[in-house]
Image (cartoon, rainbow, N blue to C red; front, top):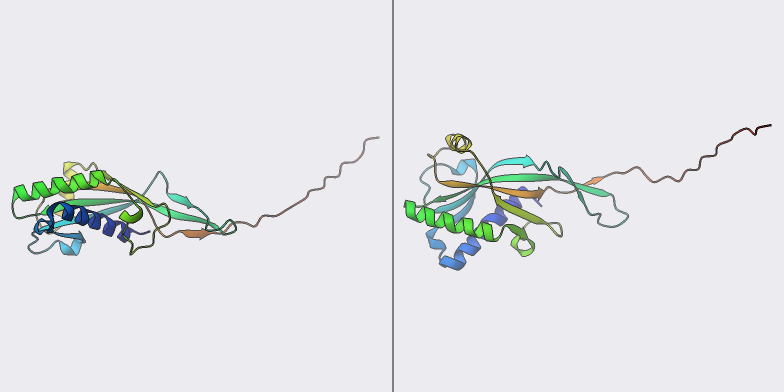
Length: 188
């Protein structure tokens, strides 16, 4: 389980499903972007940009199943990932059509699990990643784009949860059998 595994799973899902419709990907390249990628002339890309990582307040330290009944407890830090889906096309119409199609794909596959998760990453059995549209105010969206190199582009924010980090073993105090004897004096 990882942040990178979630990002790669998302972009591969979009690429695979878009390919089924357009065969040649419609001339687009699908990529996970970092801040360093926002430079120069960017055209014919569909990108997912991870712009924020938060702790999932509803789960925080997620209790993982033990690997064996005798093994120590395992917990994992539960995260929420916030992405921007952006289409970098040559015309407004092409961008809008591709963006709508990508949104339909993410709506149709709002729950990633099993073979939809990238096999190059280690996933715990039963891992599920939920994808939903995120609400981001115009001010926050513009502030985010102001911090990036190119001018504002039409983009859609997404929330991906719950992404679990590698489980940690939690030591527990050993079970102890104790016996307490209480002596009370006899009454005359």
